[in-house]
Image (tube, rainbow, N blue to C red):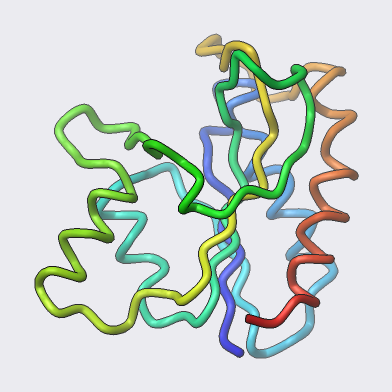
Length: 154
């Protein structure tokens, strides 16, 4: 099964970059030629372009949640999201991009898209290249959850 692991975020915006920090650690541990590990500072249509052609996509990202404990790491099927916003206000969410692609006949959308979400009450937009201690402590949990997800087949 061809799989992409994609860390999302911006590493110069402190905790917003947690997905990229996790994907960089995952990349050191993966030697399977069927698994691509990458990172992106994008959403919507651009994110869709990155996952097209894979059987499974695992997206690691900071997720704003008022209901979950700050720092909780969760496995979330993409279908459970109401929206997955783009970082560009002129773009669409990933869910909207997928729906548009399906309507246009795109057949190479991954059958399974999973988000490894690091829950945050607020996602800081302050400059800093390091994660807060609280979010840094979630990195091993997110790595473990991602590696377990890689073992799961569709």
